[in-house]
Length: 246
Image (tube, rainbow, N blue to C red; front, side, top):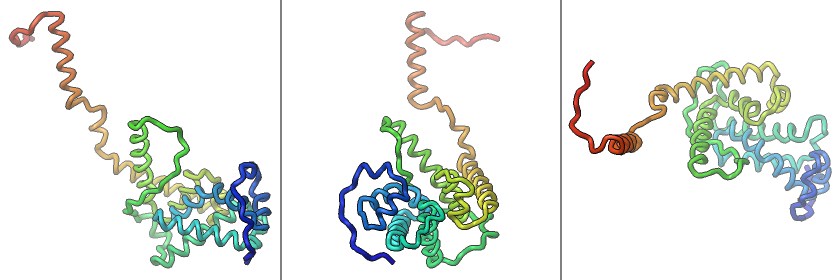
């Protein structure tokens, strides 16, 4: 375990261009700026992975913090056989899984295929999009919340694979290495996760199509007003209504 004192230094923009291995070597020398750069670089992935397992924002943040501490105090355990990000993610997965194991009994994977989570916790995905107008931003937020709730409904093993593959964009091999499972297992769980997502979305959207393109309320009233104005312009004040004949 590494326990030497950190070298306090402010964040340095020049470190952003360095690869992980260079920064790890600097971190071994207790360079605080290198550690800060690594933390900023991997925060999003680790939070998503932790959140997919523990199903709670606050606890996911605790998991990420504990994982960083464990990683940076045990850098002698990083041999460079895998990418640093893979090693760091494995630590996070183990930390999150251990917390989940302490919280409740483990459910067999065979039973998970028919389970449905009901939690309303939301995954807060950091936004990197430019500032949008309030109406567009509200629509995007509603869609994001809808999809996040669908992801939250997935059982843990499927949710972890789905987040790593379809949210984080890892390859099958990278996901398998991160979760310490076989690539075939990744493919199977991803297939099931996507199927469960599709079922959840379809259930939530059931009957929603009948409400598409509404033309009621003030829109309907305004249309009638415009029609009457147009008729008055062409025909003068409206007279009594005469029923048409077939």
